[in-house]
Image (cartoon, rainbow, N blue to C red):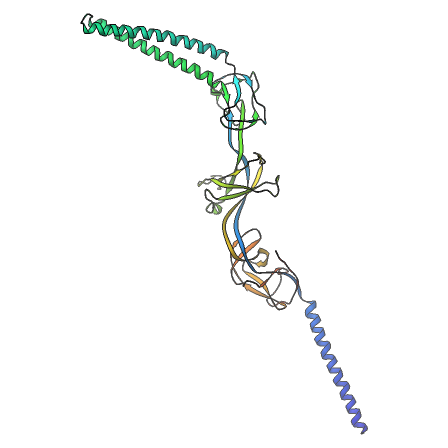
Length: 370
């Protein structure tokens, strides 16, 4: 074998090996660089599901019926038959005023009515006798007028006495305080021996003798902004939740929508009635109201955090992130409806999407189910 030729062949083989090795190292380095520089992300499959747009408010709970139990007449409180916290039925006796004076007045009115009735009967008999004599032309015109006037006076006195008797009976009736509806005694505002004068005015929910509440339903007062009030209407379904009863929902409906804004706050007052059958909700506490405004049963939706700047979403294409322009619809506290720009089944990037560029290399760490 020619020695120079063999040397040249060996050198060529060595150089070829070196070039191949350098190429492989370069490819390996490029692959390592791409893997090392890939952005870690979490993804979720774009799917159809129900989405509801909701409005949330915080409001004060009140009993749906509340009344101060106050007598119609002034006087001294004689007896109180209930205590705070007692449950009472409609018509149940709650308290009584001192009625001794009223009973004496009633006896006086009864006696006066009896006298007036006797006088009326006597005048009536005189009038009947006069009418018989008048037919026989046995009385003068002057006598006729005198008897007629006496009868009319007796009749008026009878009616006056009857009115006085009715007033005395009424005063005795209203001195006894009964429950106008079933409920709970929320407070006792007077003691036995206190003098009550309802004609003085200035009564509030805690004045009078007792305060009666019915909170088998509660009334929740909220304030809505001008933008929200247009989406709230009477009869709309509502859900009430309270921090003191976590995990429990109370169903209710919008009962009152005030269409005139408060001149100071520029907000609109709305009242919601919610059922409270076991009296777990207590008046005077706070609660959260959720109103469902709109609902789509089969909306193409992604988590809100997948949407950047309210206009684009990154989806997965191979090992890269592709930016998609989207238009949005309804949204709730977690999801947002995508009207265009995404297809069902695509993988949307829900974490690690901040700072991504169109075409960025990514590494999927997890596919989030919800």
